[in-house]
Image 1 (cartoon, one colour):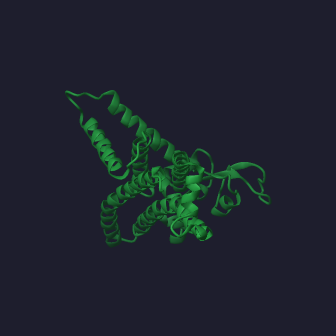
Image 2 (cartoon, helix red, strand yellow):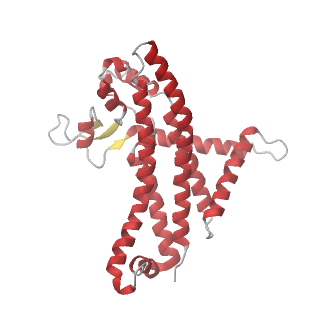
Image 3 (cartoon, one colour):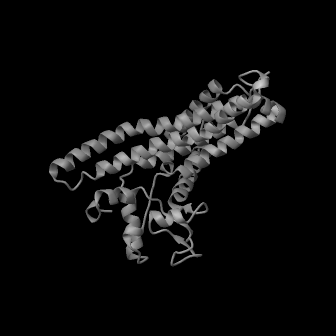
Length: 294
């Protein structure tokens, strides 16, 4: 999408709006019908059951890409003449295995595959942030306008799933469910409740303990989600702000290009670090769930 067709604020708002599919609310001309929202107001009015179609599409495609790439390495694995891709995949697996061994003290065959899946999948979702902010949205708008007859300003597309809090909360809540499951499985309901009610203060102060430990427990998925979302959202915002510099003359174009290159190089560290932090905290939380306190 050309920034010349919109104001700067409109350009930013358009790029930060998801392609939302849901049921139109009461009062809308298409009330009761399902369709794609034409504005952020319509998307908000669709309520809880609305789906950010772009986030779902890219996250699923990237998950399938991850499975295909690693399966390709496994199918063509060779002890005598390993390919470069096989060596790279083995290096990632060894890195994950060392991370799990260093942070997880229990015995659970699920933890290492889960850590590998989270790290690679989140990294791929974050990696989409390095694509030019206008390319895929422009293609989507062209398709919407010329093939579907839609107003291009009403065709939205966010290509970075991890800038959507629905995606990051989906990941963190999945981890949270596993933490609760293994906490109860390993410690029993009584042991799990005892950790919440009888620590860190004496047992007779269990209401205070329950509040403090309950907040600590609930904060795990919240912080896990918001940390990833906040960092990736801020990074995408900076890319969009830099994109606004283009079209302002040779000097602004050159400055924008240099800034974009510099931020992209630095952002490689950010997208990798955020995937690693999410994975590491998941391992730590599951390790805590497997520990019995007496």
